[in-house]
Length: 79
Figure 1 (cartoon, rainbow, N blue to C red):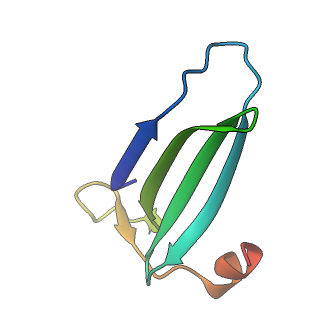
Figure 2: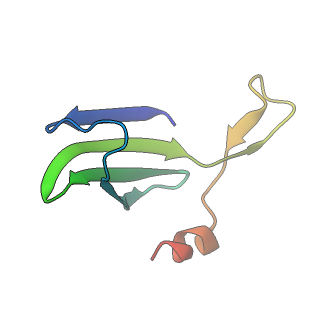
Figure 3: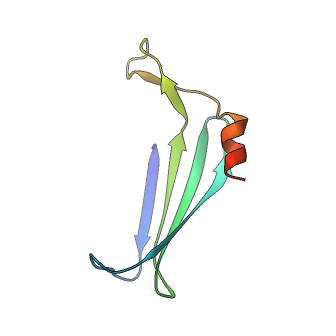
């Protein structure tokens, strides 16, 4: 994850039933954007988004991984 954001509108407590809807809203070459909506009953309780980067292991990289283009078969699974 390289970016996360959230806004909270209606409080929810531990043990309450909520519904979370997640959608990929944008595909890049090696990154993708995910939007989340959390509902408490009919009320939109929170919204959030995250940007993720597709990575693979790379022992020669300083942090042990590197970005790589997202395989088309992965994108197809979310269509």
